[in-house]
Image (cartoon, rainbow, N blue to C red; front, side, top):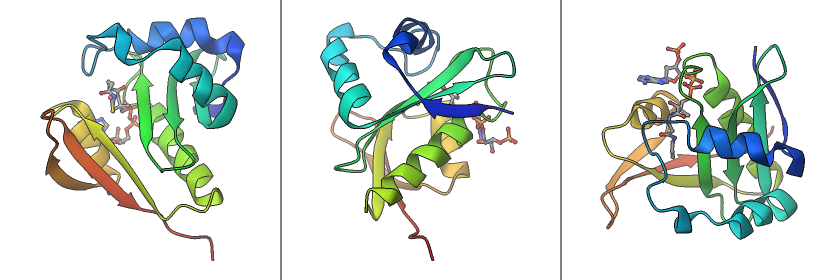
Amino acid sequence: MPVVRPATAADLPRIHIVRHGTMENRLLDPTKVTSEEAKWYLDHAIFLVSEDEAGVVQGFTCANHQSGYIWALFVIDGQHRKGHGMALLDTALDRLVAAGLRQSHLTTGAGTAAEAFYAAQGWVNRGRALNGETVFIKALERPQ
Ligand SMILES: CC(C)(COP(=O)(O)OP(=O)(O)OC[C@H]1O[C@@H](n2cnc3c(N)ncnc32)[C@H](O)[C@@H]1OP(=O)(O)O)[C@@H](O)C(=O)NCCC(=O)NCCS
């Protein structure tokens, strides 16, 4: 079972490997995700990692507690379909609810596994954005 915990600065080298270790939605323009952005998520927003049974980080997610935007969700190739993605996303959404948000949103590459993953998690497909990516939204349930 994946174990989700907050990321620390010590995780960043492994997170870098995970980020560049997926065939789909691979980062083509490295200037788009700067270390400043990663540091902001680490210091101010929601930055989580998922470990396997051996304590190795196999995935991570970053979410914006101010806007509800899921900025990143990546599980390294070879470790898919083991529950890391769902565990990370569920925990991130719990944190967004705790921050008072009622909706989350994200974009992802059209025709990717991620599209099927988000649809399976109940995200609503809102069609293509200007850059061709698919826009998803999800209403967040408030705790009873
Ligand atoms: C999208 C991603 C994060 C999913 O992570 P994951 O750890 O493989 O997902 P999970 O194991 O938690 O999957 C949970 C459920 O989602 C659905 N799902 C996941 N991958 C799927 C796929 N390729 N096709 C169809 N459904 C899928 C299934 O219902 C799955 O449950 P099951 O395995 O019991 O059938 C992962 O595929 C990934 O990192 N892709 C590359 C990077 C990427 O595209 N990130 C998104 C950028 S926004």
